[in-house]
Image (tube, rainbow, N blue to C red; front, top):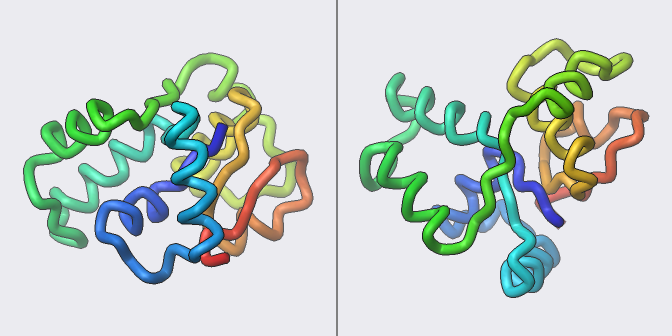
Length: 133
């Protein structure tokens, strides 16, 4: 399973060229297998960005989320195992949303697709790929 970081979901939504060709191909292949997901916290992040005017969604966040889920995107919950993984991240930066996303990837055994350099450089047990590739 591929877990998209929040910015990767936004890149995908906007067909942003920052999302690399290899990442697009990996998403397309995983999508066909029903194996592309986001952490529920990513929907919270997107809604907060929209509410504060840092991004503009094409519709309210609830409809935007619904459309993605109806299209086949999986939503991974922020549950106990993900939260405990997030709390136990050693030498990881303190941003709670990033911690929850990484914790979700670890709990789900997913590969995190991200361009966040702090996450990509983290020496912990996370499997991740650079979304710009």
